[in-house]
Image (tube, rainbow, N blue to C red; front, top):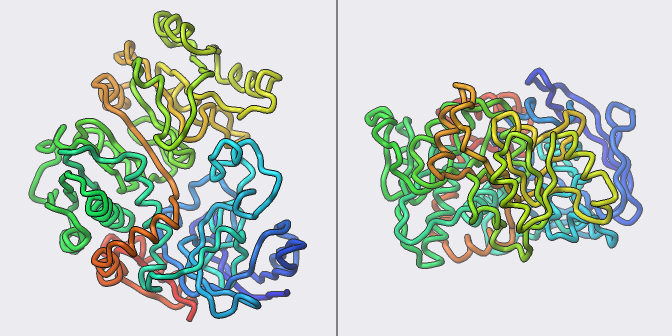
Length: 480
């Protein structure tokens, strides 16, 4: 098959430019992608061509220039599409991770074998990392990432990717009975987290309260329709009045000030869901923390056992930075294989024979200051590999918190008080579809209230600018 079209590439200066693309190949032999007549990307077998119906604009698109992936690129990953050729007439939603598993490759890497295929270092990401996205008229989707849309209306389907991501936050940080949780910034993803919380509570018969925190009239109305039990309007309530009020705070603001507010008002946990690629509260690489779905926890005998609930594994290999107290190092050596030193020492260990044929990551890393924390997430600017395994943890030795730089005092105190930061990325579409089928009232609320603006594909720049405006909620670009 040969598909030739023009699309608007997103550039590192936050602008768009028109480019000519050509896809030629097939599912069994692979594809060649050309951009302006020159080779852009070669894909092996396992991809099917789809025609874009519509694509949502999200915070990642708006902050795409800050992410560590090459530009220019056709961005957009919240895709509703229809099949071509033998699949003509079928509609699909598309999971964004291009992995061995998604392509049906019979030779998976260690990350797939470990049950974390979406974290494979070789993955590409639709509309984010290399793979052309949904702001173009055609995409190439890994065959198992294209999920047939049945039982959910197209109006709700264009929200499937962010709804699945919202649901992932709830599964990674589930409220406990009697909890009072808050969603900070209930706009694009925040309103979907409200809907996911409401759906989760109803489906599981859970008992917890949901509060939305905002400062915009239209978001007050939206939050109520998405399932919030109560609203806090920050134009009427000072954030200082909310200190330690909420057991879990889901931060979807994508701002440094929002993150700092979340740290102040959380009683037990902040779940960081959206970031902006920049330093927040004096901590670097929080965007990469979310990409890897890592957690930052205070050091404790309980937290050394941390793993995601669905994982059936035990922590074994630990890396400890030099600034960590001697007593913690000695205690860890009683239960784990402990490596210690600098970030370069850690990289050398992971690249050595000791980790051959094993996942090249430590099960968790222990740090004592912000610099070590940043290096644990991204030790080397030449690559995007963390020292800690995806969905693993970085533990903070808070005994020397007084030595942290003043701009990180808020974070140091947060961990000294035994509080935790968790993160999550994209979620399971099948689970999201099932939850929406089981909760038609929530599906109706999404269809009716969430999409605030629709633009045709030739109005992409206007759609993008509108999505940046706080008065918008969800902006969708249509190709029909």
